[in-house]
Amino acid sequence: MAPGHLEMSNLVLTERRNGPVVMAARRFAAVIGELLANPTAAFGVIVVAILLLTALLAPVLASHDPNVVDLGNALGRPSSLHWFGTDELGRDVYSRLVYGSRISLTFIFIVSIIVGPVGLLVGTTAGYFGGWCDTVMMRITDIFLSFPSLILALAFVAALGAGLENAIIAIALTAWPPIARLARAETLTFRGADYIAASRMQGASPLRIIVKSIMPMCLPSVLVRITLSMATVILTAAGLGFLGLGAQPPLPEWGAMMATGRRYMLDNWWLVAFPGGAILLVSLAFNLLGDGLRDVLDPKQK
Amino acid sequence: MSHDRIFATARQAGTIMVTLLGLLILTFCIGRLMPVDPVRAIVGEEADRATYELVAERLGVNLPLHTQFIRYVGDVVRGDFGVSIRTGQPVISDIAHVMPATIELATFAILCGAGFGIPLGIFAAINRNRPADHIIRFLTLIGHSMPIFWTGMIGLIIFYAMLGLVGGGGRISDYYIGLVPETTGFMLIDAAIAGDWEVFGDALNHLILPASILGYSSMAYITRMTRSFMLDQLGQEYVTTARVKGLSKGRTIWHHAFANIRVQLVTIVALAYGSLLEGAVLIETVFSWPGFGQYITNNMLIGDMNAVMTCVLLVGVIFIALNLLSDALYKIFDPRTR
Image 1 (cartoon, chains in turn yellow, orange):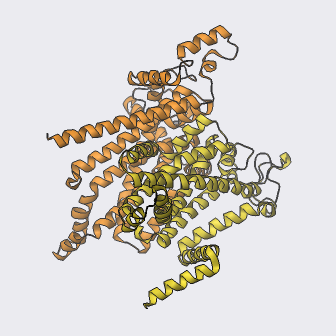
Image 2 (tube, one colour; image 1 turned 60 degrees about the vertical axis):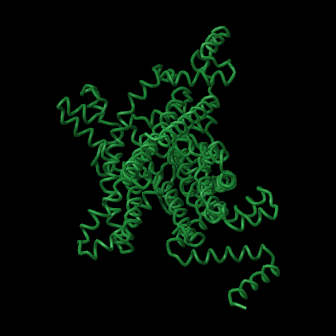
Image 3 (cartoon, one colour; image 1 turned 90 degrees about the vertical axis):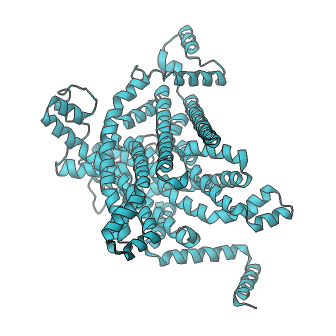
């Protein structure tokens, strides 16, 4: 028996013994381990982890209530009491940033759980069936793709009305087409593979083939792509907030904070410097994490 | 022309028509979904029922949706984009009025972006995995990840408020407004025509910061693409052959590798130029720059339907045209794609 085979059967045995959840957790740990070995990807992982922890522990980490107005203390410089200063209403900028991380994570979480499945479904279906189904779906995708994402999101928000929920919907509407394109391209490379033909001959329905045989193969590159597009999502969300069409004040969304801070920025740099720095850091982290994930999950794209 | 060519051209034309139709459907849906009542926006809050009905009938908002859509398409084909509710002017003349400001900004930005981006990209490719490459890649990564409106504001705080090196918001200082007659709408050209070099200098002083920040973001994109195109070429066997034949490194890179990526670079620069519209929306708000980006945002904030629909349509058409242009360039200059 070849050593490779032995390893495989060991793996199968452990999977039987421990169940899929434990195996998934192990695989996840292995991926994280590989990511941490690469310094730039490690930076991404750490910043995203900090973001998660900040959102989770916001009440503990915040030094003040983010919404308490203290006019006597308005526009205070960064100090030991107010680390990042106070805004025009005397609210603590640091605490608002900490709570704002929850809004950013909401954007990321909801957009990715909408965009991933939708993009995957549209792309794999178009790629698997081909013909007119492919043409129609890809034409629609192309129309969405022909816009810069911020302008399309702006247009959707203008149609739906400004606000946090509508901004999330608008961004999700602009973020699925690149994923659909990618999933389609991947599907086209697998479509003619022997294992697909085999499962078709066994009588598997198209739906079963797409869900069971094609989607798992597209998953790594789609995950990488979603991670990379989270950087854009963060920037677009902040841009919408900044233009007054995203999350509305008094919500401590980072873009909206900068929009109000802009009026006082020439004498009070901290009002815009810190929220913008946070956006840059998170967007940078997702870019680095995405690049790192690509090296780990999808080596052929390197 | 062979039958195949005719068929391919017809197919291409059909694709463009379908895409444009899709675009019109999209803008129509956006317009109809908008929460603003177009009739109320014209007649005002106090209008009586009869006036309301009259205007509603004239606008055709009571008609079934498909009839409205056909009317809309007919209007667009005839070049009638309606009147902006906010300014009372035809939308198209409004856009023609604000466009020069944006083109001026974007042209300067793309000159910075391509002027620095292409050499940096080539330099990074040649020095792959050396410190220079790492520094350049880091710079492009920052340019790719930064919120451009933040960079704009930080730029204003440092170079305008602290150092006083550049002008603040707007295209020129307040006391120069109206001194130079508006001939082309391009501030620099107008000032040059009028021979007023003081205004010219002031306009340049206002342009330099927003244009270079916008330029940085397109430089990031252009550098990254140039680097990867160049790496692709440098890995090819003809490069090795040329070097083995005794051609100098500089000549190999310039006459062979660079010559081969020129078409791709033109395409990338054209796309980057178009994408500046996106950055312009944010940068124009930061710098109070009265261009297309501000026009689109202001109209979206107040829900000026005709203006929003036309702007979105225009952006879509620009990008479809850019994509077609890049396809065409590939076909003309790269015989393999024919």
